[in-house]
Length: 325
Image (cartoon, rainbow, N blue to C red; front, side, top):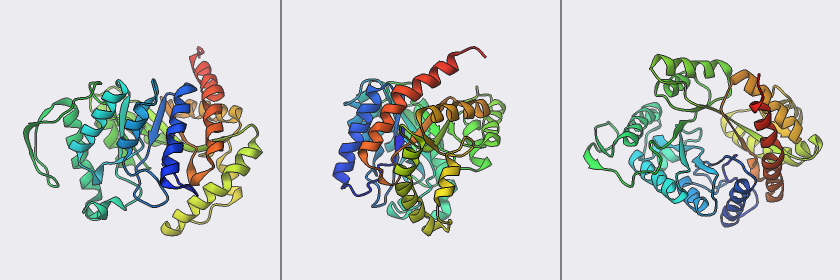
């Protein structure tokens, strides 16, 4: 699962305490991955995912820990590498970094970058991050940051190389970039998934692992899942929609998105299992990440969703995928 640590009515301090309880429970019930997103807005509690993941590293024992995402375009790749190498060492080799250009733009003026360089910043910084994975003494020069002349970059992670995923929001160019670099890509759309794999093959890579990331909420009945989550999800989506010109999210829209061919995983454990397996038949992906915390859904409901995901959904999916064709 992953979270943006939406605050809702909670203080930032309380939301971070709740987040650490959520990742501890996710570890306890046997989930594989916990991701933390980066935002620079008042409605979210995390602007520094690596700091939160470092705290999670010492409270967990087996779950993998990743950003979801690190806004690499407005960050320093050297510092990102050092931070996640540190999380990797603290966690005994369980860290990953998911990088993206950012669907929110607040970090660009905050750190002194020009939005006109949105794509160029990401391309250059991703190049440096990948070089740092391979060599501690990188010789490199770029347009947006000071050149490196073989200075050592430390600490080195326990994993070699440190796993890097590229978050793709919906453009063919992003899918091609991720595949041609041999990187992992969370994606929702089958044509882009094929572009990603084709680009990897053409660049001489084995097809990288593919993840799908979606919103969701799990409850004993589908009515409970929809009723409990909709007000919070609608409030969050409509707030963002007013900034971006989206139409309001209606209850009918939300219910349609929870159907088998919709984007969201809202329903009973059985419905969520069916939908994960349905999408696996379509995309053949390796990882599924779900975000339960949209809009500040109450903590108790999030904990129940984590319990159901870990104790009912994940075991059923694993068992089904272990069966012969």
